[in-house]
Length: 496
Ligand code: BES
Ligand code: ZN
Ligand code: ZN
Image (cartoon, rainbow, N blue to C red; front, side, top):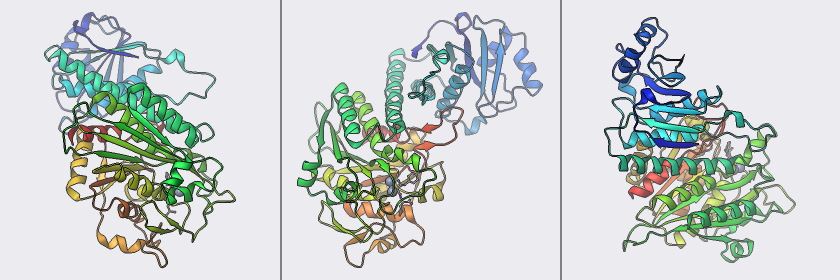
C-alpha cells in the first residue's frame, strides 16, 4: 500500500473513495464538510438533520456518487465529541476507514484532513492508523484476500503546512507502524514455526537489514554466563534457549549519555512446565514471546529513527515445557546475579528468564531499563484488556515513560510498587520465591520479582499479557496480535 501527500484539490481527485470525519456536535456540517455540502446541494446537512449522520465515534456513513467530486464514494467517519477528540483518534479513524473500505473492493483512497488537524502529528497518526489497520493474519490461509487490497492512499488537505515536515512525519509513522506489524507477524507464528532458534535467526535477519549489530548467545554461552534462571526454564525442552542481543549505537555518542536496555520475554511456547496449564486456550501461549517481539519491533524502528542514545535489546528466548529434565516445583536455581530462587510454580517462568535478561543488560552497561512481558493473567483481572500495566522505580522514571505512552496514544496504567509487596516473595529456603503467597496482587509480586534484579537502576516493567493480543477485532484493528507498547518505547528512547 502506497501512502503519499497530495497537493491537488480533493474535488478533482480520481479515487474509489474520499474519507473524512464528522464530529458529534450541534453544527456537524462545517469547515471541510460545509465545502463538500455545497457541492452536494445540501445533502450532507439534510442527512445530519434527519439523524443519519450523528458523528458518533466510528459511525460509518457511505455516500455513493457524491456530486461535486470526481471520487466514486464519500465516507464520513464519526469522530465523537470534539472536546474528547485527540490526534491519536485519527489513528483509529484512519484504520477503521481503511478496513471498512477494504472489504468493499476499494483500491484507491483519499484521506481528507479537516481544518483542526493539518499538521505533522496528524499526518503521522493517519499514516500509522492506515498501516496498522491494513494488517491481516492470513499467512497460513490458502485463499488470501488479495482482491481486498488497498493500493494507495493520498493524504489531502495539508496544503498550508510545511511539506518537508509533513513528509518526515509520514516516514516516521510508516517506520513505526511497519515495525509494529513486523512484531505482530512474529507473535502470530505458531511455536512449531518459531522456536527460540528460529526467533533468533529472524532477529538476526532483521538486524542486518536495518544495520544493527546483533549477537546470539547459544546454550553454551548461556551456561558459561551462569544464567541459571533461564537454564532452569529451558531444561524442560529439547529446543535449546537463545539470548538475542541487538545494539544500536548513535553516530556521535554523547559522553556520559544514558544507555537504554530493552529486555523482552520471549517464551515461544508456555505449557506451564510441570505446573502445567489447562488445555483450554493453551494454544494462545504461542504469543508468550510478545515482549521479545515488542523489543525487536522497537529496535527495528529505532534503527531508522536514530535516537541520540545507545539502545541495547536483550531478549531471552526459550520454550517452557514439562520434559523429563524439566525443573520441578520446589527446585532452587541460582540466577546469573547470584541470587537464589525457589521455583514454587514452573508456570511463573517469565520472571525467571527476565531476571537473567535484566542482569545481563546491566552487565552490558545499561543505565536505564524497560522490560516488556506477557507476564501474568493477574494483569487482566486488574486492568482488563484496555490498559497495559506499567510498573517502575523510581516513580519519576515511570512517569516520564507514561508521558511517552500518552503522547503516542497507548493506554497504560501505573501500578503500585510499595515495599509491602516485597514481603510476599520471600522464600523459606532461598533468597526469593517465584510466586507471591496466592492472596492476590499477582501482577505486582511478579513485577517485584524483576525489580530484585533491576535493583536501583531506573526501570519500567510493562505487563502486556492482556493487551498484546485481542480476541475480538476492533474496527481499526484485526483480531490477534496488537503490537502494543512499541510506539511508547520508541518515543521514550527518542526523548531520553
Ligand atoms: N504466560 C503466562 C501469563 C499469561 C497469561 C500471558 C494469559 C498471556 C495470557 C505466565 O507465564 C504465567 O503463566 N503466569 C502465571 C503466574 C502464576 C503461576 C503465579 C499466571 O498468571 O497464572
Ligand atoms: Zn507461565
Ligand atoms: Zn509465560
